[in-house]
Length: 313
Ligand SMILES: O=C(O)CCC(=O)C(=O)O
Ligand SMILES: [Fe+2]
Image 1 (cartoon, rainbow, N blue to C red):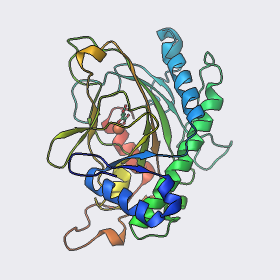
Image 2 (image 1 turned 90 degrees about the vertical axis):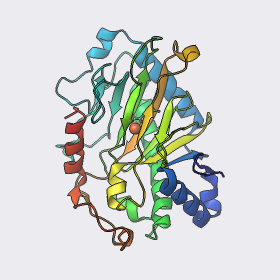
Image 3 (image 1 turned 180 degrees about the vertical axis):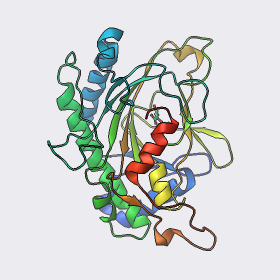
C-alpha cells in the first residue's frame, strides 16, 4: 500500500475479512488525505463487469434518434438517456463532452419513495440490458455497504451504522460515454466537480483522464488497474463528517493526441442516503479545531439544491 501526497492509496478488500481494523484505518487514512482510494478484490464479479461494458458500448453505438427516444425532456436526466452537451458542472461555462444513461433503484409499486425516485426506463434495442444493469446495481450496492462499514469503523461508529442510512437510498448507476475529441477540442471531457452523494464507486477509469485536485493545488492522475475500483467521498458524507472525510474535486481531461480518436467509457455508481435521512454532523467529527460548519438537511432536499446548480433539476 502506498499513500503519499502524490499517490493515491491502493488496497485490497480481501484484507477486510482478514484484519478489518487495519483495512479500515488504511482506507480511512486514504480518504482523509485525498478523498479517494483505489480498491482491488472488491467483489463485483468480473464476468458481470465485462457483460455490462459490452451492453454499454451497444447502447451508445445506437443511432442518435434511437437514443433520443429515451431522453426525458424536463426529467432532469434522472433516468434514461442524456445527450451530449447538456450537463454543465457547477460554475463551468462549457458543457461536458459526454453523453450518459442513468439507472436508479427498482422500487415495488406504491413504495414510500416512489414520489421522489422516478421509475427506470430500459432501451429495447439492447438485449439483456435490464438484467445486466439491475444485477450490477445490486453488486455495487453490496460492495458500497462493505466500504461504508469500514468507514464507520474508521470513524469509531458501529460497523452497521450506515446500513439504515442508505436503505432504499436514491442511488444512481451512470453509464458514461465520452466520444473521441478533435485535435483542437476546447475544454475537458468532464469539468472539475465534486460528487453530491455519499460515496462513489467507479469502474472503467483505466482509460486515462481522471484527475483529482490534491491538497497542494496540483492535479493528480487517478490510475486504477484493469480490475480495480475507484472509490471517492461525496458531499453528503463530507457534510455528515464535518469535512473529516473530504469530497475532493475531480475532472476528466482530454486525452493526449494519440488517444483522441478513442472513446472513453466509465461507470460510476453514486451511492446515496435514503431520501428522508437527515444529514446532521456526527458529534465525533466536531472539535475545537474543527467547529461544526453545516446545518442539518435531508438527503432529498440537499440533492434537489445541488441538481438545480448543475442544471439537472
Ligand atoms: O468518468 C470518470 O472517470 C469520472 C466521472 C465522474 O466523475 C462523474 O460522472 O461524476
Ligand atoms: Fe464525479
